[in-house]
Length: 159
Image 1: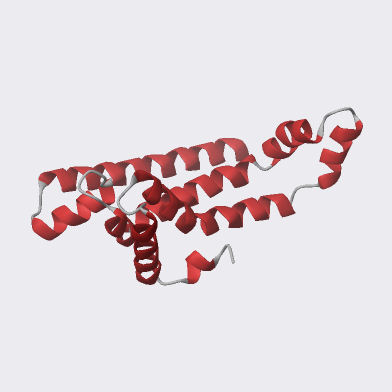
Image 2: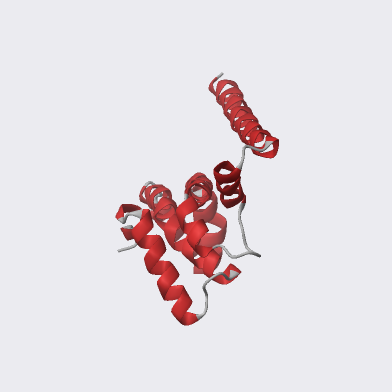
């Protein structure tokens, strides 16, 4: 059930969410926008976190509880640090999924609430602005920079 937004066509999801949010008064609001994108990004966050939790040895958390930690403290000080890579991956995947879903953002947008992808899409439809080229160049530069930094860190860790 939680993975349904991943397999549902985006246009169908956008129309359904838009119609539902209009009925309950969340259409064109920041809260509605955040809820729609959270539901859309949730499957992309669940998968890496679930994988990280499956690889986590529960007996370590149990040992922390036996040593005197409360269940909450054991989760906070033992489980969370152990699955931090999964959480970080989930955050990146969720952000990218949200960034990529221009269709939902267009349906949820209002004159006062527009995201950068919606503005880029609108500008591409109306005219080719140098601002769009600059934003695209910046995104490519950031992506390449992150890839280079990741490669350097991996190389340093492997030696």
